[in-house]
Image (cartoon, rainbow, N blue to C red):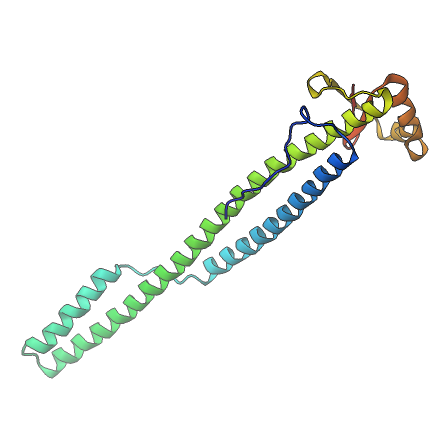
Length: 212
């Protein structure tokens, strides 16, 4: 199944950023994260099913369904149309049974391979769906961060900064220093934001981004 999501507009240029916009973006992010989790679970199940199908797949017999079927028909025709001794007919019937067993094995193997191929195709489709979801999630996380930065700067300065004018600088912070910079209930961090009229947010562990 291919993904076709109706995403929130990722551009913040044409809208006034407020808490409702950010809430809407966060809700969309949560929906995408839930869908990603569902796809991950499906991929785990598909991988388990593929491994199980491979383990159960019988040993491949030589010959094709067409060739084995034709050989069986030839021997059956020979029994019906030829003058055979009892011993010759018995031997021919033994060979027919042997070929029929091989034919059943070839059919079982072919069916097992078809099942494995179908499972692998489903896995490929889910892997592509996962790539699409990851791209959308990355986009919406970026949009949320930008929106939060614009809103925070708007709260401090009283005007909305256009996204095209928003500048950002990443700053690694040693773990031991994070508590001192953030402060109790983020009071120190908010004080720095108001002092310099910027937004300071954490993008990943140990890295903060200053936007303004």
